[in-house]
Amino acid sequence: MPSPYNLALVEHCSNCPQRETNGGFCNMAAEPVEALDSMKFTGAYPKGALLFVEGEQPRGVFVLCRGQAKLTTTSSDGRTLIVRIAKPGEILGVSAAMLGKPYEVSAETLEASQVSFVRRDDFLRLLSSYSEACIHTAQQLSEKYEAAQREIRSLGLAHTTSEKLARLLLNWSGSGEETPQGTRLQVLLTHEEIGQMIGTTRETVTRLLSEFKRKKLITVKGSSLFLTAKAELREMVST
Amino acid sequence: MDRVNRSVIETNLAGRETLLRYSAGQTLFREGETPRGVYVLHSGTVDLLFSARDGSAKPLREAQPGQILGLSCVVTQRPHDCTATAAEPCEVAFIERDDFLRALDDSPAVWFSVLRVLSSEVNAVYDDIRTMAAR
Picture: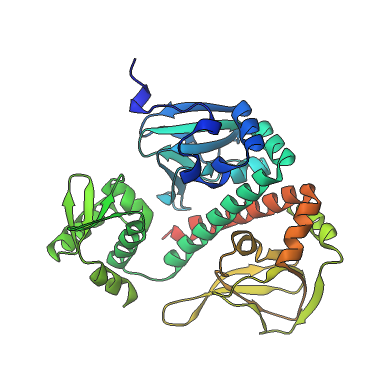
């Protein structure tokens, strides 16, 4: 029988091969991991699955085991903004679950993903039993806070849109792969979604990417994007 | 609820804090500095600023009495992401990082309050993003 969405589901955190790479919450000591194992519900989700929606009462937290998810919010004038791309090992919906307030963002998978759901009561019980779980949760909350703060800075500093796009590509290059043709980025986002990350329209993103191609800053092959002239991109950001 | 969480944290930090007084314009910590501890604002307001690339300071937020500054940086051990300057005369309780972390070890209940304060901070920044992104 084929596995759902071609994901070989790992049911138990204790024998998950991703544990160390995911780090933090996934890689706690044996006892808290066992406790987590006993309370979570693991499932496979296709690309485009909504895990939770902004404004919804928090049912619990979602641990992203494998895959990626975009976290979006709606600006006060009604536009969709991507505030963050969540990576494996991240706990989603924590602040809402901690406070018992509605989710501040929506979470949607960008590719087939494995996600473990933990009910709010169970999650709070895990925290009150294991300080290690608190430490990792605090770390994740602080990282979310700092990332959101960086987002504010880039909104507050009047960058041109091409500068914002260059900055985004350079940010991504950290997780890219070095090849003879340049740094290879696997881009899961559509032009529209890239626009939602840097606060512009789909049309502008398409136009700017063509301009970058023409200036030989990037090349595109299928879903791979190669950064061929990182120094020039950096110059666009620093001038 | 925030006030409750903050007072739980403060009660548990009693005895570990140093009371500091700042006059208007004095700096509590600077962007890029390694965090030395957390600052509980007792009275006065503090401007949180970040520097633009041209060197000018841009306002980020205004901290009010009761707020705890530097919490996320102490947890992640990353440099301060903004500069805190007293907007008016301020009274601040400063708790060194190690003392703060020890207080958490001693009383797991404080962890809950810290997590809730951090959660409210995350939500506040998301609120700012929604407002700032509106054209």
